[in-house]
Structure formats: structure tokens, C-alpha cells
Length: 296
Image (cartoon, rainbow, N blue to C red; front, side):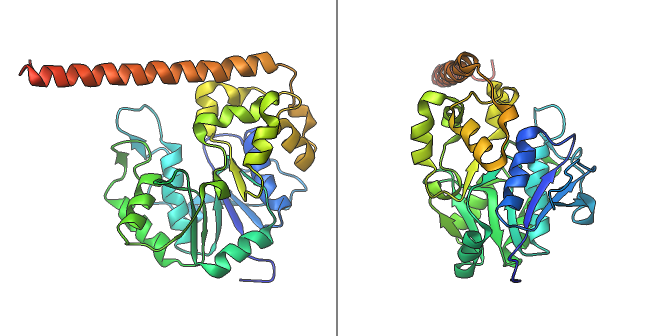
């Protein structure tokens, strides 16, 4: 480890860097990391001190457009990112951050984590690990994870099979050793509740939830599903205050708290409907099996 510590790595492919992703990358640089953004194009980040590099210099066995998920149209960019981070960390030490991760603590605090353990990840839930944030000075562990993906590519059977599920499985069976930090460290707000960071009335709750956390995952996939990705956080919300205090990003603030509340509530309704539909299909399947109607 150099006097400047280990670098922070990000990846963005398939388009221009969106505002929230841009701020996530900047958050690592502001925290004191030498920050490297890998991409398939140049992004306008003047004066940020962020280094930009071609992702193909690290991994070229498959391109982002080659990796898909069965039953889903289009490239699986998140799955490509899973493979890329293993390839990257198999060749060099550093901290990996997904582009929907805001770094909340200084680089020196991350250095201390890796001084105690050569491979650091965090828990998303008590039983599930997540690879959105990985610190590594042990190339053997990422190399093993990279090798484990090869038989599963390029068409994956389902979402997350080479991401959290793979890491959790390898740690659970003892194939890799990792310092799995508690949920609060990297994922203090669960993806089912991420809309709360947009709601002004829950600001104090979110401040308490993230107190002492190293990072905050914004769960970009969920923000996209709800529509919150396209809405600026309302004035007085936790996210608006965080972006203003860290980046002076006051231009991202909106007064439309009612729209945010609608989108958050709509997500809860959709989850309930989806759960109900799953339950109904399960009951139907079991009933057909009991009556010997499968295959008819």
C-alpha cells in the first residue's frame, strides 16, 4: 500500500454517465482516493482529478453486449460489471465501488479495513453478501471468483447468479475467506426502503441509519423501477441535503415531494401485487400437481 493508499475503481459502459453516478464517482475522489473510471467512452469530468481508462485493457473475453440473462432482452450490464470487477481485482489491489455507491468516509478509514483483512465485503442482509463494494489486496480470491464465472457465461440463468449469490455461496462453503462487515457498513438502507432518502419527513431517520456508515448504496436498479432515478430529491430530504453538503449540488433539488411520495407508495403497491401474483401461481402449480394435471 502506498502513502496515498489503494485506488478506487468504477465502471460505466453503454452511455453517458448520469448525474447520480457522476456524483458517486466524485464522492470517492473527494474522500481522498486516487479514482479510476473504466468505460467504453470518455466522460466530461474536468477538474475532478479522476483518471479514465478503457475497460478493454482489463477484460476483453466478453463485451458488455455479449452477456445476457435468460428471458430478458438486451445486454446485462450489471452482470458484465460483476465479471469485470473480478478480472480487475485479480490483477491489482484496490477498492471496487458500483456507480450507485456514495462514499461517505475518508480513504484512510478504508485503508484500516484492509490492514486487518486482505478481502473485505459487506452484508446486504444477515444471510446475503453483496459485491457492490469490495476491498482487496489478495488477488487469489478475485481470481477464484472470476474462474467460477466462466462456466456460467455468456447467458446467465437468472439475475445475480454471478454477483451476490456467487460471493455468498463461496464464503458460506469456505472456498474463500472474507471479512464480511455488518449491514450498516456499506448497505445501511435496504433496497426495499431506498425511497426514504427522497422523503423529507424521513430525513432524521435516514441520518440515524447512515451514521458511521462507510458507504450508501443508492440501489440504481430499484430507483429505475420506481421512477425515482428520473426525479431530483425534494428540498429537505436526506439525499438532497447530502448532495448539497458534499458537492454543492443544489441544482438537483426539486420541490415536488408529492411526486416522490406517489412513486414510493406505488412501488409498495407493485411489490404487494407482485407478491400476490407469485403466491397465486404457486398455489395453482401445487394444486395442479396434487390433481395430477401437470403437463396437460
